[in-house]
Image (cartoon, rainbow over all chains, first blue to last red; front, side, top):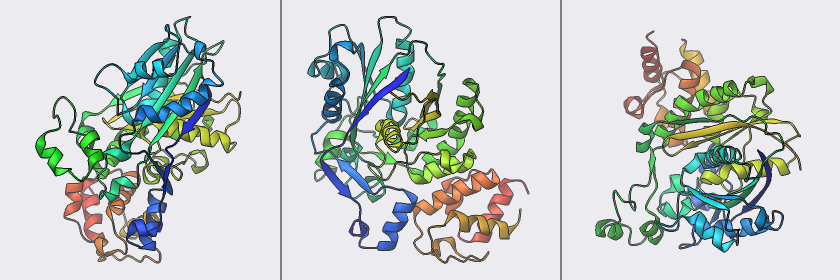
Length: 333
Length: 78
């Protein structure tokens, strides 16, 4: 399983954070940059969907990967276009993929990318599947209240296309999965699903927040999430090393879901990871949910951080509280 | 577990607060620029250094460095 290419597509509207975002308080702004790490976010327009954001990077990818070679399409997003059919089915049609290319949606959140790769690993046991296109699109900014300062400067929107190619001899990448239902209380969007449909009270409450009327509202308890991270992430990292039969010393890079600098620093210290092995890419784009790992991968690659044969631990974690991770070896093209 | 070392660890966790000085009697919430992120930094430091995972509920009643130190000691059974 080889990550052959990654294409990133941000919305055009950029928000460069500055002191006026923090009531003109330079010190608070500096503190935010230090603790959270976001300098710039990209914001979709109200009504623009996650599937809209993946179209451009997907089209750019299809200039390198001929459409007839795509054997399977996975769409990872927390905001699907329709109750049914799948958004991957709609994207398959828009992109002109062949009829015998399978499709699947993966509404999994921050661990969506490693989870998609774990699906790809299974798909590659089928001799007819050689190339999988993973599209990841997230629009968290549209589920955040305009005055919710704690959340709105943390998250950003993005679309990503990843071409995963089957190797002649598949290298072993064993996956680690997990879930702790306690996390339900710490990060959720409760309204807008089958359990709690949007009702008149909700729509009236958010009459000045049309994006929330469409997408529901993200609620996050930062301390609760941090507790889940401290409780589960170190153990998951240990399991990834163990199940792939490697030692911590053999790992060249740790690429975690880009939740915030604070969370990444906490994991680095708790797991005793040498700081130079950590990948931090919060500054340009912020927390982009399931897009964050492939975006950070691509940027680290462009910075020349990866050498052929490097061992890279990837681990996504978040809403659920769920996690998924594995060990990948970097192959240059 | 020593309070001076505990204070040193808090200062290291709060490396974004310039010229911070802490005494056992210092009120944590009076730290310049105190915000919800500092609560997270404290919880993370205490878990990493002292293997105690505090809840928001436990922290609500804590105001001074000494009170926090005592709480962590209690949780460690010391």
